[in-house]
Each structure stands twice: as C-alpha cells, then as structure tokens.
Length: 315
Image (cartoon, helix red, strand yellow):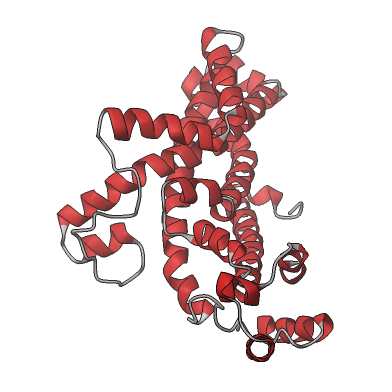
C-alpha cells in the first residue's frame, strides 16, 4: 500500500527536481537511472519490499539524506506532540465522561456531550486558527510556530526537547519548548477528547446497570467507592482501547496540526515529500505510520491484560 499510493498521484519526481528550467533527454534518463525509476513498476516494488524487510528505505530524493536519519530526528517531535495531546485529552475526557454518566440527563451530561460533539465536528484547521488568534496573536501568551525559540540550541540526546533541555539543565530552553508545545497539543487533542468523553460516558452508563453495582450500593458503599472501585475498574479496558486508537491516530494523523503550527514532525515532512513526489520518503513515512499503529495496538492489548487479567483469553 505504501508503495502504490504515491505512484497513483499524478506527477514525476524527476520533473519536480528539474523544475521549469528543463533538461536534456540524456540528463532526464540519467536521473531516472540513478533514482531507480528506469525499472518497471514490478521491479521497483520487489526492490522496495526487499529493502523494507531489512529496514532500509534508501535516500530522500530531495534532501539526499538517508531516510532513516531523517526519521530519527522527526519521530521524537511528532511523538512529543502526540503524547501531550493524548495526555490532556485523556485526563479531561475521562473527568467529563464520568461526570456525564454519574449526573446523567443533567447540565453536566448535556454540556459534556455537546462539547464532545462540537469538538469532533470542528474542522481542525478552523479550530487551530481560532486558538492562534486568541492565545498567540491577541494575548501573546504562546508562540505561533516551531518547537523552540531560535535563541536556544538544545544538544541532541533523545530528540525530545523537553527531556533534552532538562538533561542540559537549561530551564529557559525547557520553558520555551513547553510554550511552543501548548497550542499544537491543545488543538491536536481536541478530536481525541470527544472520543474519550463518549467512550467513558457510555461505558459508565452500561456498567451502572449491572447487578453487582446495585449490590455494591445496597451494601452501603459510598458513591465514590462504587465509582472508582467497581465502575471505573471495569470501564478502564474500553477506555484504554479508545486511548490506544486515539494515540495511534494522533501519531499518524498530525499532518494538519504540524503544517499549521510549522511543527517539524513526520506529518509536515510527509506533506512536503508528497508535494515533491519524493517516492522513498513517502513510502517510508506510510510504512512507519502503519507499523506504529500496529505496535500501539499490541501494547494497548498488553496494558488491558495487566489491568484486567480476566480479558486475557478474549484478546
């Protein structure tokens, strides 16, 4: 799939490299040979598959750098952004979902459901522009783009700027990286917030109808004991499943957010690679995206088994 999708898009990487200046037929043929584009599609596919199995994707047509080297730099940026997006949306989403379920048909319920519906329906680019206007342009609280201020140079250790700045004992660069992270993480987490609110609410409502919950209440347990000891524990596997799916989507679907905030991550890199018809980069980007989703789903299943060992056989 990662091989064929980019080839279905009209355009030629060699023509993109040449631009409007043009080149002789001999020069074009030489460039295609160097890029391996003179071979048939079947031969290119076999070469791509063999290299992918060895974890090799060659060099970027545009930057001439090894794809794996670019990926190692870009991956931490996207992971850092997606992690904080899912973190705040998980905390707020579970609180709102629990309130909506416990106080069903109240203003809390209607408010949480309405908020999740609006958050899910809001176009991400429009939401991002509103947030930028109020918090970056009008109030000036946060920067509009980038991962860190230009005046800071954080030594590369892990690729995660927050961690690297702490390891360097540079508090100013840490706060600069944190301020740059707030707006894109807030915008990116809005969509997953809507999903988590709905899953938490529906899970709590379903479990509240179970006989053992009525029994727990009949025994005189306090409401918070019923919620956290019985309902939340049994609703957690469904919530974790939703979180795993949402986190995978954030990691691979942060294209719009990274583009709007000029966040130097995989999504923005993938868009530029598609525009340039950079076949190796696009193939590698899609391949790694699918791999990430598979790994996250597997990890999610393992976490659910740890939380509720009774579900081991069903997973």
